[in-house]
Length: 269
Ligand code: NDP
Image (cartoon, rainbow, N blue to C red; front, side, top):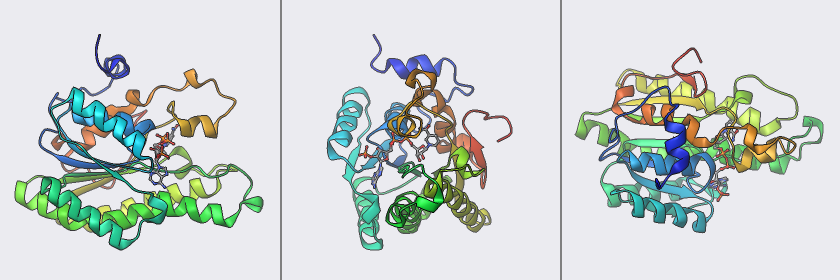
């Protein structure tokens, strides 16, 4: 019996089969690593050799992922309980110090944590909830990126390898849809942030910056967004991980400024 049956089942159907240790020695920070897609990515990246900084809101969930990774891989994770709705420049800066102290490097940054907010007409959308969605989905990603850029650039220079920043998008971040309010608007803005940063990084080439839409996956957010849907109709997060692992690995060197879709990759996004 394999330790991670969901991954084994999904991996057989991956369009791209990354080499088993393609993330070996890399240090990668994943936000929202305690649940859903972030948890699946954390376990899978560790199985591919990455040392992970697991950032999330709920300590117990992060501890469970930490325990699994420690038991099933040879990598060394750390956990960082952190509510991104309160992330300011100084706490982001201390995250950089922590990454430096733990690993002395940072090769990858995955902005995965998000909140859905209410799915209601704009006319009735409470602005306090709007602001929270934008803080978590957009502003925290910008703040975290800004604080971690120096360490990522240093890492790229020292190891002569491009670093990778991944923003998580959504179908409604590429085409607006009624009632998706702040979530859709924040995901459009995430695409803009990705393009700005990718363009800033293009000339030097030390970092690649891309966005990725995982498509509908069986998680708590999906259940919240589509309460009437049979959960079994959506694939598990593991089914869409091959693009994430590829973009974090050296095989994706030079892929920059792309808005990708895990369902259609490597086709047209
Ligand atoms: P989940 O709701 O299952 O998980 C979200 C994760 O983000 C949780 O670990 C949660 O932590 C964390 N998080 C939420 N708010 C905060 C916060 N304030 N501070 C720190 N961590 C926080 O979502 P998914 O796994 O489904 O989504 C992952 C990404 O994929 C998101 O960016 C989402 O927008 C995107 N996506 C998902 C789709 C889907 O069908 N599921 C479709 C398209 C895009 P905790 O559990 O501790 O609250």
